[in-house]
Image (cartoon, rainbow, N blue to C red; front, side, top):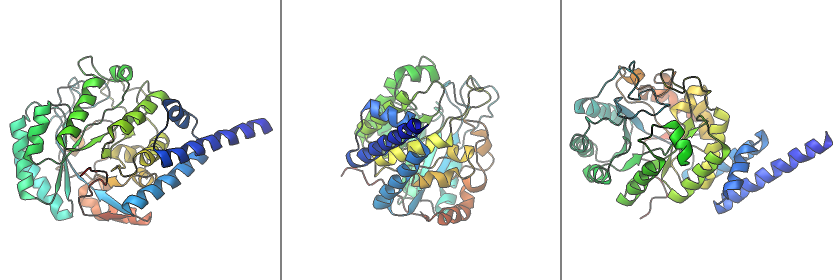
Length: 362
């Protein structure tokens, strides 16, 4: 018994030592990352969250940045095995917002205090470069003080350039998992980890504030997979990182797989904050879906962004990437005052500014 306690104490001290080194050097080996993730303990997690909070307060104070999420199409040409809007789901209730619908969402969001709009959708061929560039251009003209973020998947470098030239500032493209073999177990053969990562490098080179991220607890995921994800983040040095727990959807091949946990997701948030201290890091809807106070826990683990839903109320339940997705209550943009109170209760405050990343190169 005494030997077990000593081993546990030694293990926790090693974990804390790695957390300290991560904070000071922002560099660990693959083996150290895997150890830090696999052997985590509640004590080490508590210590990590303390360090992560101090780091984000050092750079961003107690400000929480809000983004107005507009889910403008749930058509998608892809067939990712985990996604509820995959092409092969015959029971998805498909929709597309018109340009006028999207501009109306922006108008409402601006009046509510949002200064960043996130246009997110499936890879929908209807939204050609010309159509999407026109929408971006009109948002830029109508609300010139706002940031425009796109999250519309893998496109050509030329497409990304056109959208950037039209006025888009930011682009979110989660790499989902770095390891090509793991990626192949989550996606059909026509999709590859290498191509997705190449898109991210294109976005950075064009000049976007670039965001990536990954699922936590996805099928077949190992601590080594997560270690590879962290090494990729260190190499890419994105301005934004979005992570969330895997949550199954009943109309997908992974419907019977267990969901990821809030515990591991929060731990990874803390690690990302120390690895990339100036990154914009959301407490995601998925985290709020698996835990009633997931947003608050995410903020206390080092996150500094929330993304309430600005989509028209009639379509929010149709953009169902996973089961039981939150789209009402404090997930809805109209409930911003309630969200402000929840953040205030844990010592943070919602701010209406654009909230650019501090690690944007001049």
